[in-house]
Amino acid sequence: QQPVQSPQAVILREGEDAVINCSSSKALYSVHWYRQKHGEAPVFLMILLKGGEQKGHEKISASFNEKKQQSSLYLTASQLSYSGTYFCGGRGGKLTFGQGTILTVHP
Amino acid sequence: NAGVTQTPKFRILKIGQSMTLQCTQDMNHNYMYWYRQDPGMGLKLIYYSVGAGITDKGEVPNGYNVSRSTTEDFPLRLELAAPSQTSVYFCASSSPSGTYEQYFGPGTRLTVT
Image (cartoon, rainbow over all chains, first blue to last red; front, side):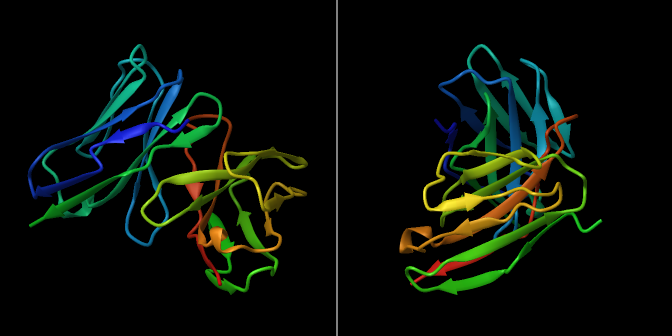
């Protein structure tokens, strides 16, 4: 069963912050985050391997709560280049992707 | 390194035709994957392989077949194409060590009419 992401879409102005959530109904031992620009392939952002550990990539960070099987992606001081669709992938065996969150950043 | 390459980039098939989507990686990764992505949707795993000669089904394997005779190549075969197989197909690879980061190819856009 695939992870569930929320919200489905986010619209921001440059410099604003956003949070994307990912929730799984089954136990995971890692969560992956990818970003996909329109018409391009997904690109790896980060992996969360331990409960509660935060990782960072530029001004993007994430956390993973093992007990709740939830992960959140934090985008700080958003830039135009952050626009795209963000996918979380839960690994409880094979990697299963959520449905994606469309992030649009306007000037 | 070229990374993960896929051919063709675009293809139009008639219902009932067959074709093979090619995927090659030059990173010496053991793990390789095939995904399909329908418009506005996430990635669905079709098949994956953990090494040459070893393949296994993913979430949506029906209508597809794979083989893995070398570490570098992981072709996906579509038999008797159906309109429901219209999608963008991505091949990816990863190493079993480290972060399991998946490297994706540029994708093949397939239309079945």
